[in-house]
Length: 380
Image: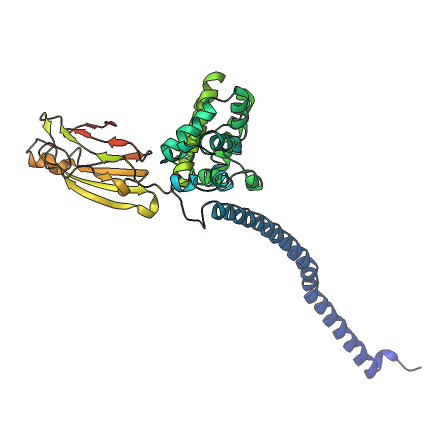
């Protein structure tokens, strides 16, 4: 019998088989991770696709919402161009109500009653020439309404921290107001704190927390709700309606083209250290908002009476609602007076920020100053 173990051909075949098996095992080791990746990646891609799809839907919803509001503004304001109060009231009833119907949040009955009582077939509509007159008439409708109507008006307002999925319930003005208040930047801790207080507020008073939020920060909002939670119900009911009136006022100001304003801005510097007018003090006036008109407005040197030469600092078309800042160069002034001051002056440049809210009123913003103190007030 032939000894198979000594067969060179068979030994060669066995060796070749061993090599192939070893290679196969290496190949399997190599492709196994690839197979697992191929099984895993489609799931990840599917999950990623679903997330992107959901995000896309949200964006489309928001875009559709914005487009809807954009069309509303275009239709009511003649191609997006602002009208004066007189120009709007000369339009048809539908155009007037489309423009001012949501001045009071989701409460078009106020605009409708205003139109019926003061515009429709009335010669008196020609006497309504500015935002103040229009607001006073609309707000009187709220003041003279029943408590039930007032409660309905309060309940028509959204929670200040409404989420994206609730945007469709907000008017365009409410979205802008919440954004300007920085409520979208609440931290998780702040949001939770606000949510708890907001829930407690609604439980206690029966209506949502309302704050005119166009020119405030999130810190103002959080402080306000915390403080107002302590008020008695009747006081907060009146206070909430006052906030509603402020919101309506600011919306009317933003809606109309303001012309022929009667308001103006003046200033007066009094030197309390020497008991005399602050003559020859350099002053700058900056506009902070609206941002499209921000920057240095004018620079002055006070006259012998401590007042601005040439009359008001702002008047007519320059007198725009917004936030302003006087900068008083008190250090230079007291150096000229040879007053004893420190090497590093306690008061050098004094910035004084203030707001102009009504284009029909006189704003007098003076400075009473010494090298060590200053004060101001709204005068007339």
